[in-house]
Image (cartoon, rainbow over all chains, first blue to last red; front, side, top):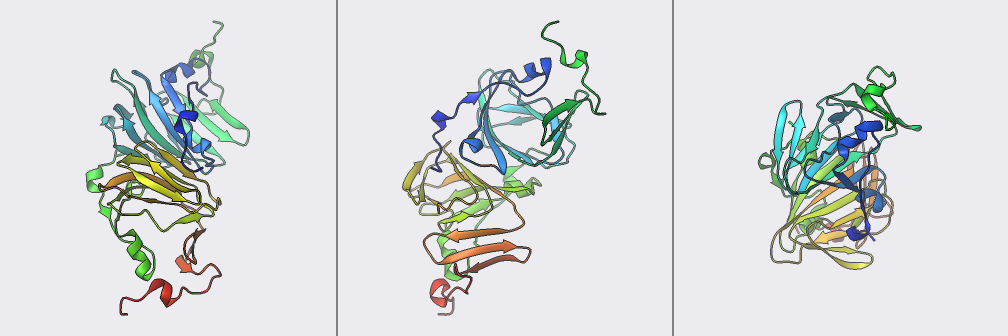
Length: 162
Length: 162
């Protein structure tokens, strides 16, 4: 039915980032509510950030509009213009192609949650503002490389067996 | 900047419904936060329903995914399956093409708010469940007709000069 039973949709940890970069989002847990409700044209996730957790590495999307609203607790939006306090009800938008790398960081000592929406597009390119990395998404899946398309270095992503 | 100044985005009344049908949403006020933030791929609106207000006539979309989350207060989701209570944090999804007419009605004695997301598509057809009306949206704008494409009748839409 249209009303979702949120108790049946798990908050999952994990990251698609390669190697040690995945550690960046260790404090992030994602509830995929749009997927659970059968939506395909955009993703809708409720995200819980534990204290010191962050939403992602600082990034921007070339093809996908992004929207967030704070649901509970508070966090800090960090972008090219600095730091911005976000409280429950505050909203932020990142239109596709605007090169303003951003992420949300929980600098408080309590968990917080936000809802985020992102368009689903057949292809996508994203750029990371603080490291030499980009991501391309197409019919073959995600591919993380340096911004010139060359492979990430061992220095960037580390190795569990080091 | 990405963080929106919500105090600068008005809640507007009004309706695109023809004739007396516009009265249905007299208790609905819409804050177009996605538009204000430059998003184009989907609409994001915060909607305030006054007591007895409703989100829309009961309808469903053929081409556009729809999502809602309750922000404050409570309301009743009415769809083909009956009535469902929605409290703050509750979410609902209506995938494109699922023929389950729905709307949200504020049956309480206090205002309530929800956030709603809908895909922007080049064309769209919507059907109204409780009356003989459909809407088509294309490069020429909205057109409301009976479900067979014939014009709405005076009995359906009335006339301010009656």
